[in-house]
Length: 398
Image (cartoon, rainbow, N blue to C red):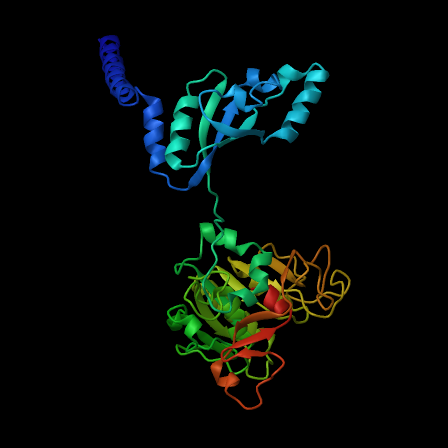
């Protein structure tokens, strides 16, 4: 009885499959016509050129299909082999007696006498039915797919192109479900580049060692705001700069005052807090001495720590700085490269200690407007209100 049930089930499945494929074949019974219909819906192709792919037999008969006389079905001006380098390899293989072991299909470009997309489609329809032609198709236009934001200062952010961010942005521009903790001097919340991009109810100040909520974070030093902008300034919003991740959610974890001084305990508290909130990534653009407590805090942290290698221009394999030289498995240490993709002179380096280099020379990013409005604002770094140019592995890490 079980065998009979299985037989019936298999029979039904075969019958359904047959009905489906039969109806499908009826729909595409004229594949050439179907292809032309699809092509007509695609406007982006040359109105004069047709690409043809020959089968293997014609491809290895190197003199065939080489002139306009070989295509009497259509009126064309020229026939050009656009795979000449591959053909050289194929010819060499034939001379060596290895022709059967190489895959080669010649690709031709046919230029028609009379321009017009209708003429291109008509020529394709005729060529598709000819012997030795595997494919005939339009010469489609190609457009760059790199996502280029419209931020007004983007052309001055040379580092984004160097690390191929436009290609990355084709795939992903960030998510506000991802949090990045900026362990630094704070972030100026009111800067327009951070509108809606700061998790304000998680922002903390650790200046006293223990954390104090700072739902309206500020930055009286500028360093943290600059770092935060590199990470997550609003992208493609028509103004200013754009960050690496346009939509990431930033968390300000303030560890030093306006003068930039801090302590290991402040850092440890910030890292511990980040762990309690499951913040998955921390940017730490600072260096310090070898603190076992700090190392332990990083080892306790389940997320990723991206830290700066330092700006002393030394080999930190031999002259270690921290946290860059900790061997914790969750640290990435970043050195500074210049606009020519070379190690910047002031960047620390080390085969064992530095994992990667990133742009860190002449980096344009966000800066507190409150500082830009001061009369003594540093003209050497000031670019525009709310934007400064800074150098350092502090900029490379984010």
